[in-house]
Length: 238
Image 1 (cartoon, helix red, strand yellow):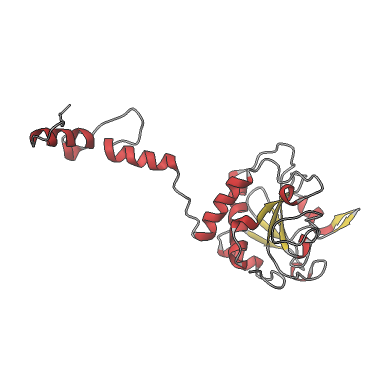
Image 2: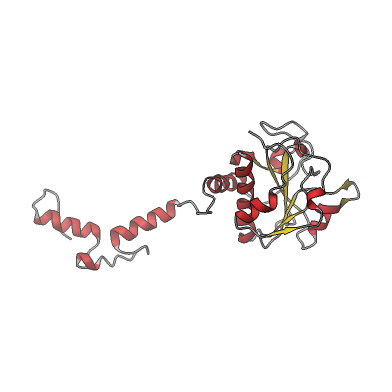
């Protein structure tokens, strides 16, 4: 399945996900022609890392005319919508199900503000990155595997987005596609914490205060006492 035509719905879809959006003047008419169909998202970093990175994305460079991506993601989690048409962001490369060396006409590019040389990724920016990608993929009926780092697609030695574990990124995107509310997946640590709390009356390791309802005993100690009172073989109260 692929979405045919330009993503004129970008602002609405991102806002519906609870994300902050700035619509640049003329974005609905900006681009290097129309999409053939949309099959995924390519994730980039801007390589600048500052508040004016969007200008290069919108207006281009001396060697490459803008727009260079449909979206710019600021470090505070705000999305700038620069263009709705095709943008020069993908370059040469390949990905299963995408035309080789022709992804510009089939993918939405997101340029996240980061210098690409070790600048941190603020939590609010990463959260918006994942939620924005999930919202777009959900809209076009694609899965998290069609969220691809530029470095994964490129045959030209690209490194972006530097410092992001894309396997972990896609796992979170997959969860968000299935759960538009943004509820976070329960981790193994959280499961163990909940289990510890139920058994001992405390989620804090090393603390076993017991339950008031069980006379200050933990669940295990209460069961042992009951078993001993009932004469069940092997049960012994502490």
